[in-house]
Length: 197
Image (cartoon, rainbow, N blue to C red):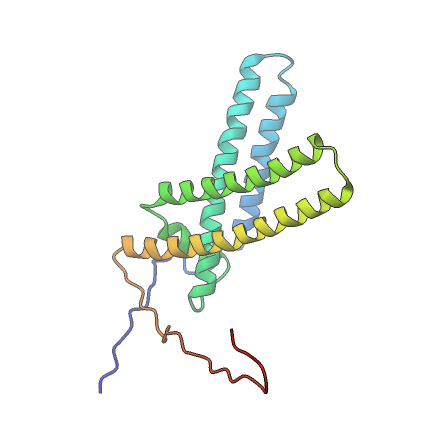
């Protein structure tokens, strides 16, 4: 019998096959510069509505860019888990290439997940400030909100994994899932006198 060859998914290297060791430093420098520029605009406004509005617009654009980068980073995390020998900056670079053509959809996914997270965190914080109750009630509510947030984080990993597969489909590449995903019955024999439900 002939073995079927599985297609290996590779994306072209960005600029060079060697990793750029200065890339994280450049990214950090850009972040510090952008935050500093926004802060200088806002602090030196001295009542000037133009500078305040400009600083607010820059802050909004920086936040939207952060949301986009967060989406790419999450797809990079999925790539580093699912693909062999692809991790770190290589996985992030591959994620950047992979989401091309579906950036708006990925950005919308990231915005929705962040909004749900914000509503849960903000609602809990608002409830703690406005509702006067015992500390035990606040702790119980906090535990419930924490569990919901953890479930949201797990759900977001599933969402980004599905998005990863959809991005591959949009590039015309199907990913074959190997393995047998069938359920098997587990036999259970009751011990003496035990009744099965």
